Image (cartoon, rainbow, N blue to C red; front, top):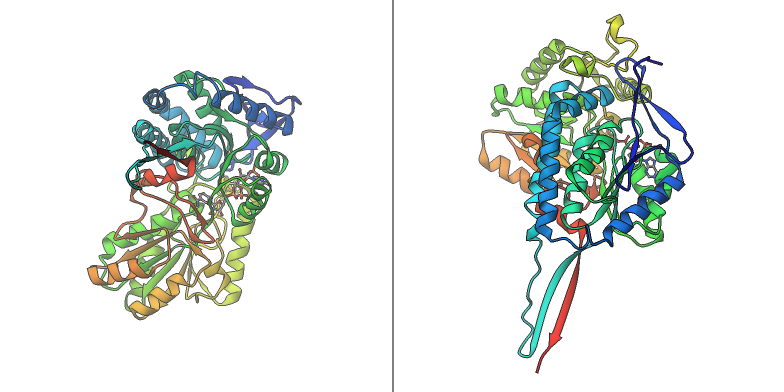
Length: 485
Ligand code: NAP
């Protein structure tokens, strides 16, 4: 174990606490395989404490009884604290997840932005009056649901925690967050900053521990009124089944195999760097990664050649040294990606660049893999259908617009798509045909997109995060009908 392993608490009821059992678990640095931090290993009794605290807070004068504008002010204070501590948060995120420091810095700013955006919304969650005829007054109110459970993955911990918690508390809910045991540090710090910002005890609780040990218990807890889950399809299916037992709403943000469709008339100087970034950012561990490149046959050779050159120039290293690409999150994830590259080769795809762990002995202890392009793939191959969740771009050629639309939609996922062309007709036609929650034209991702509704079609999930759309997940509508003389 590294002598310098950090110690972190959990945050329950406005306090920094240990687990009731006193047990801790090791959180590893993916760049070195050393222990980075020790955290409380929560068990069901800790979940009970957190849900009870969140329930008390929901029913309290200090939270349930305050004006919406006051909730907004607390959120703005939290946003200011995130910005004031952004460098510390970024360094923690970079070490914990492995992502390059500049990406982690951006993630911290985006987290602050979520709290600012929804702070402005807190006092604007309005209902309607509905005209049903003389002698009636009918109106609706949007009320919070109660205790909102947030199950967060390891790939963008501070962003995804903030993405869910900010609209939840803006609407007046309280939260129990379960970050991934692989990268929990910034979620804990966010819980601590919420205390410093003056949030009443119990409004934002963070329970650390393994999903396999506390996940089911959290989802089936009778005190939980809603679940926001971000993660894999298989865990999401389990969460849905468990939530069905006590009939609570779930918001599902699952995986993707998003197509980036490049036509021969596209501006390749603009397109190729964006296509590379869409897959290699966060070492490909991004739900919305542009992991399928659909390229018009006439442009194929030039696009793949330019991608190869870019990939060869990328510098790998520990995130904290701010390389172009960091490691995979875990040894298991590294093995999974290596296996998929082998599967791709067996299926007949050709490795245009990468395809292996780097030779550099310095990187051998960490979970590094080269940025990889699998060329000459067909869409029915597993490497074109499965979410690999690593820096592996699968390249498929097409000849015309209809074929591009067909291939783009031949996927069980539908999270994001990119279209690259100078022809507005092609762009708008494809945007109308593609079955995905977000379509980008001549851009990809738009810098985090706090304001833009985000979520899946098909197995990519349901419900929308981000933007004003997210409020639907954290409110329930009450209709009041009054008959007067
Ligand atoms: P995962 O294995 O499904 O884990 C997600 C979360 O669920 C983690 O906090 C995990 O905790 C927890 N968990 C595990 N078992 C559980 C159980 N039985 N009950 C409740 N929670 C449980 O996914 P991942 O590998 O962390 O993340 C990668 C996946 O997330 C990819 O498929 C990616 O596409 C998807 N993702 C989607 C979005 C989106 O917005 N659509 C964003 C990011 C990632 P532990 O880690 O402690 O086990």
